Each structure stands twice: as C-alpha cells, then as structure tokens.
Image (cartoon, rainbow, N blue to C red; front, side):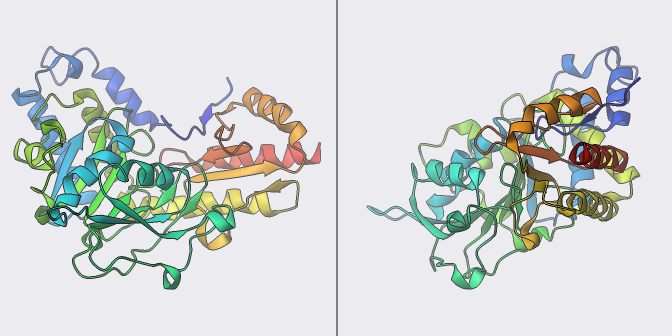
Length: 365
C-alpha cells in the first residue's frame, strides 16, 4: 500500500498517533460512556479536557502568567475584525479614530489591512509589494506611528511563503499583534515580546474551527461598543473561553496534539526537526533551475514552501505523478499558482524525503 503524505496548507496533516487516539476514544471517552462530541462544555469531563489543553499550551510556549489563553471560534480570519474591535478602544478619542500599523508581507496581512480599515485608521508602515512579496522590508525602512493602537504582523505568510523570525522594536505602549496561524508551535518564540499572538488551529494544531488567542492581561477590557459580546476578550477570558459554547471537539483534538508535542520533546525539539526538513526541501529546489522558489533566502518559510516549475505546461503532469506516489495537495494557492508544500510539525522527515525523491525523478524525466 502506498504511504500517503498530505502537504495541504490547511486543514492539514495531523499526527497519526493523535488520530488513532481520537478514534479509540470516539465512542467512550475514558469510561464516561460519552463521546467528547456529546459532552456538556460545562460538565466535569470536558472541563478536565479544556484545563489540560490550556496548561499544556502554556507550558509548550512558556506563556507568562500575565497572559490569558483563549480558545475562540471563527478561525484566524475572524480575528482580523475581533482584534481591532478589542484594541483600538485603548487609543480612540472623541471624534478621532485610532491608528493601526501594519507590515504588509503577503496575502494574509493584506486581508488583515482591509478588515482593520473598517474600525480604525490604517498605516502601512512597510510593504513587500515592490519585491513581489518575496522578502520582508528591513525594519530601518518601517514608518511606525508613535502612538499606534498596535502593530500587526503576519509572521508566516501561508500563501507567499515568507516568514518573519524576529520580534521588531516598537514604540513604548505599542503592542505587537502577531498572526502566527501557520507556524505557531513550530519554533521557539518569546511570548513576552508580543501583546497578542493568535492562530487558526487548522494548520499546525488541530482541526478547523478553533482559534487560539494569547493576549496580555492589560490589553483586555477595551472593546468598542460595537463589538459583539461573544467576541469581547473580557467576556471570553472571564468565562474561561465558555461565554458561549466553545468548539469542544476541536479543543479536545488540539489538546491531544499538545500532548503529542510534549512527547516529541517540546517546541525546541520540533524546531530542530523543522529546520532539517526545510533544508532538505529547499536544497532540492535549488539544485538546478528546473524548479524555482522566489522567496529571498533569509525570509523563506520553514512551514509553507511555494515553488514553480520552469516549464509550467508540465504542472498537471507533475501533480498527477505526485498523486500516484501518495504525495497529495501540492497544488499552489489559486491566487499565485505553481506548487506549494506545507511541512508542518506533523509531517515526518520521511514525507519530505519522498517529495525530494519525486522532485529529482520528475526533473530528470
């Protein structure tokens, strides 16, 4: 039987051990007689699942005590509205809107800019558009607003394959908001350098439907009057993510992934594995000019690797051959074309090696 390797950008591959455990517990979780899908979110069984998931995530990312971890619905995209509705009130004055700074590095930061403009003034402090979104503008060229409500970054652009691996220097009292949807838990990060970190679960944590939000205490409690009560971080935090019914099964699977990550040695161990996988794949793409990755080397993502065939008339043949070998979901995003391999934590190095072998074989053929 052909081994299947799923390179989808999201919803994406999950650890096999996690899927097997979820299958074994599907009809009866720990002798409760219930599936997790059937449990009351206020019952002791699910509360224990939730508490364990929250604590494991706090340990994995070394989240300081003065940060809250929220499990919310709507995906990462919804936070593009929820974040300004919760943060611009800190700087909004009578008759004047607050300003939000953005670094525009690709498709997802572009979406966040458009959404935030509904609630605040937007200042694009720097844009990678002149480079075709293949590099991050040096911070010396950023034009930051001294009293901005916050600075928004997409630290890993899933579509464009650009990754920001540093926390920038910002003016005092300007929190950094980081969309880490597609590389959260793949590398070590100093949470204390950020005001808010958020990410949709469906890329590197679990199934679609859960959004993890890590927010500093002092940034909670500033929601605009128009903010729906279920999206007010204060309500969510005070009710331990259960102001409304949370995505219970998604939180359960995320919790199993957190346990799996701890068994692998934690984020530091996974980061070394991810470096190895990315080096392996980029080396194959750079070996000759048959394939091209357009991202400048210092900004290449370890998680999402877009590439193009020199002769794009061969795209369909490439994808057909890959599928026949069990290498799935390699077609690039419709907005940029080409190919894309997403090699998240759950992708084993054997999967990357299988892709490299196929890349070499196809190029020779």
